[in-house]
Amino acid sequence: MKISIVMTTALLLAAACSGGETAPAGTSESSGGAQTGEIDASNEAAEKVLTSESGYTLTPFATGLTFPWDMVFLPSGEMLVSERDGTIRVIRDGEPAEAPIAGTPEALVEGQGGYFAMALDPDFASNRTLYLSYAKGTADENTTAVVKGVLSEDLSELTDVQEIFAGTPRETTYHYGGRLAFLPDGTLIITMGEGFRYMDEAQNPMNYHGTIARINTDGSIPDDNPFASGEDGAPAVWSYGHRNVQGLLYDEGREILWAHEHGPKGGDELNIIEPGNNYGWPEITYGVNYDGTIITEETEAPGMEQPVVKWVPSIAPSGMVLVNSDQWSDWEGDLIVAAMNGPKGQKLVRVDLDEDGTSQGTEDLLADLEIPFRDVTIGPDGTLYAATANMEGVIYTISKSESE
Image (cartoon, rainbow, N blue to C red):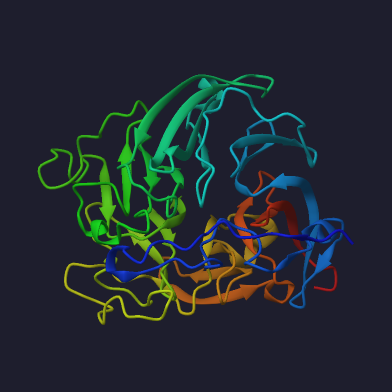
């Protein structure tokens, strides 16, 4: 058995962090993979079909990936996978292309930085435009940025790459957010973390720390953004008071923008995002600092939104998909959330929703396998895919076991 020790890249930050919070090595939001000192045996697992006690089968679909972060299917059937170390790979028939897509920007691969989410333009079939979020800059000055480019017909290169958005600069390599989603009007939603050290700035919509932004695809600001004038907030801000949003999707049937975010030690949240709303961090939270000290005694306050679902202890959510598949008809309209290395993570979580988007409860899936998952998606044929958060990443297909 090939065994490798994966040391987390989440180093101890200075105690001068805002609010006194520190980020010890091995927190649930570290860059992925095993906690400090844990053994990563994902290579061995990658060669096996796994069956959970709850009756689901995981079949390896693609291996040989490095910290896979996001999965996107092309209309032609290939899968694109962003790797945190700064590459995008094409997967055909379960085989990653040997060479990554050329022409993509250089990323800051440090701490939690690297490549994040991708999105296809709503008119991709005609313009072949791909969007990518990533950590841009140096360790001393960096931010979440978004570029767009034209993907070649042979999927080998991204050309005409243009930056269309960059967040507020910071001096940390943690809490980037980085998820992307399109609204029905063609505007692009971008999530950003508060850089960890700048938690108090999440309550200040005049910057982009701890916000969700909305832009046009050319980088301009929609006239109906809540702070479009720039007088009371940064023009691109759509919502604020977030910590580190790493799950995002638009639910067309319910006309809801869903987002989930990491809490500190406890207090992960699933929220319905509305323009101009304040989601409370760090003035209200259901979590505490990693060292156990109190951030605030308040869990609710006037003018601040309450989550649809909260997780205490943390599950370390990352990635999310809305179920719309004949293969999973019993879960139609529910959300599936990937969970990484949180105290109650290393699983998938199904959020049971009614027609209005009210949670009817949650169900843990695959928890007995103890696999940290970074992303989850559903393919064009309705197959459920999940990507691990390990350095030596694996993408599995998930199906109901035959006995079911």
